[in-house]
Image 1: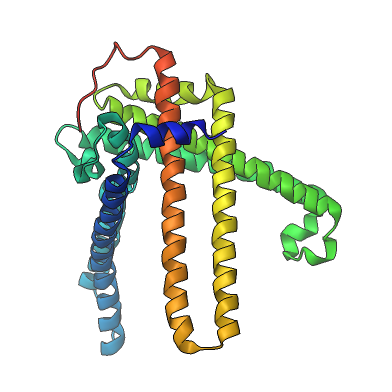
Image 2: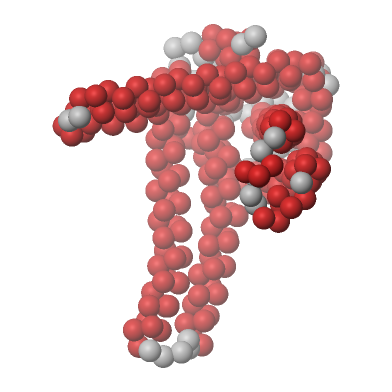
Length: 307
């Protein structure tokens, strides 16, 4: 059942802690970059608006130009920097598997010379694919609600129509959404993994490989999705039990000092468990890609370039 998780775990035996530490450091680094970058933009906007209100004067030409430039700067920051930083998170899972060694600079793969423009273009296309598919998905789940009671969509009050039919339709909609979400993630990650594997390959090669890896091995993909779903469900249950137990213990002791220690422990344990689950989930996407991409006979076409 958990074949791909097991394969990833065994393949990187001895490197797991290093991978996780590099991911944590990268998340801290990218968060700092995001906070500083976005903060600068909003500081300009906020400072300009504050100067208008404090001076009780209307917006001047320079102020308007400053706000426009700040907004353009924020758009540019998101598109040209933060999108790539966001995908850098996935690099650690794939490149550690590929090289059997984890390095901090794996997260900055897209910013290396000769790779930036190809990486940026691919991330934009992947983001468009994910957005368009999720948008289309909303039209699949919407009729399920409309079929029950069109007035629900207008009033937003489902309490009056809380029937077995509503429950069944809601479950169907949820299952469809989850499955399609996993499928989108499987395709987009496979496209990105192909880019990490062969950054100089064509856009068509990356898109075709990502799609074929999923749909030409669909039975294996279903196994992957089911195992990922079970891990997510198990994590939710475990973390829920920890939180409920911690709160119950705190209420039983009725002691502020005890809660002062219990709350941080709950948070830390929940984060550790969440990290472990996420690590296995994205690691399994990597092994799914590597095991099934090999069947597409692409190894002889492009040589892997070390990150």
